[in-house]
Image 1 (cartoon, rainbow, N blue to C red):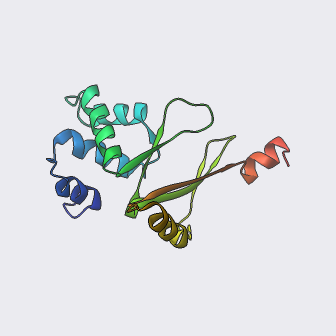
Image 2 (image 1 turned 120 degrees about the vertical axis):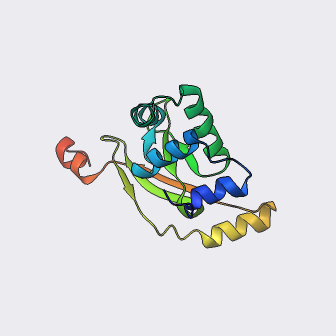
Image 3 (image 1 turned 90 degrees about the horizontal axis):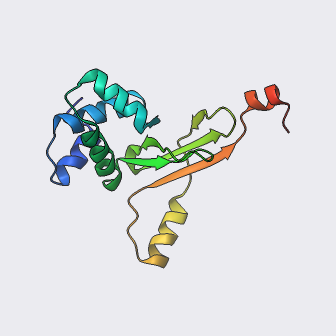
Length: 146
């Protein structure tokens, strides 16, 4: 992982040290492209470095959420979030409600809305998470849904 990583730079700008736990959790998130549950993060961190404790992993996930590096997203009625990396301060995807597959897309075309929200509400928006839910083509064909 490069010192030039935008996520490492976010940690440094916010005054946080680059601990082994933070770097390992970040490595796991980047390897999974940020679509991963906390249980999966725990399992992979333990495989990479068993000395990193469960509490450190959860504190790191909370810190990354506070810094806007990741955002939790909830699929269907699951109480366990799936964490997504916020590349460039935003992330966009469609989630199939049947198979739970993620379909990422880049262009959200939200510049006008962002400007309007900033002007109307007097806030400086630093990022966003855009999610759409539906049934993918494979599940529609397999389940004969319309």
